[in-house]
Length: 243
Image 1 (cartoon, rainbow, N blue to C red):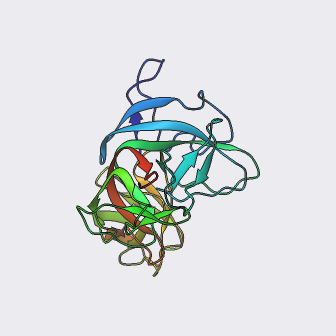
Image 2 (image 1 turned 60 degrees about the horizontal axis):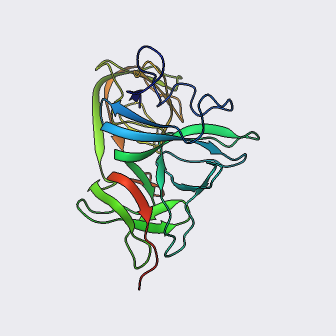
C-alpha cells in the first residue's frame, strides 16, 4: 500500500503509506493532517500520531488519541464520544515511541473481530477491533463498503522456491496490505503478507515459497481471527451518551 500525500511543504508528493512508516523518528508535527490519494482506495485524509512503546497495531486498528496526540487502541466501552482513526500501517512492537499515519477520512480497512455485511453500520466489538454494531458502540460517520470476505487477485506473480518474496508483474500490489492472507501455487497454507516494499511491486510473506514460477495469487481480507472490513469513514467517532 503506497499512499501519496497531496499537501506537503516540499516540491512533489511525499508517500505516507510505507515510507519511513512506522518510524521511531518524529518527522512531522504531531497532529498534522494531510489530504492523500491512494491508487487503490482513492482520496483519504490522514493524521500523524505517536504510538507509545510496546504498542503493536495491525493494519486498520481503530484508535483514539489524547491531547498529546498519542494513541491507544479503542477501548471496548460504550458511549465513548471520542473521535476514531484507523491505522494506515501495521506497526510492530517497539521499545521506543513510534510515529505513523492514521486514516480519518476516505475508504480503507478496519481491523475487526468478524466480517460485517456491505452497506451495514459498524461498531466497537472488542478492544482495538470493530465488528457488529451494538447499542452505545456504533462508530458514527462510518459505513461498511465490503465485507472481510473480500479478495484481490493478482496474476503472473513471480515466486522463488525457498524465498519469502513475491513480485507482481502487474506493476503494483494495490489492494494488498500487511496482514492479508495470500494463497496460490507454491504458497504454504496460512501465509500472510508481512511487508510491502516502497516499489509497490515486491511483497514479503510470512513463509517461504515451495515452488518457482509465475502464478495467480489471491489476497483474502481475513485470517479467521482478524477480519479486515472495507469501510468509508468521514471523521468517525465513537457514539456518545444516549439519552
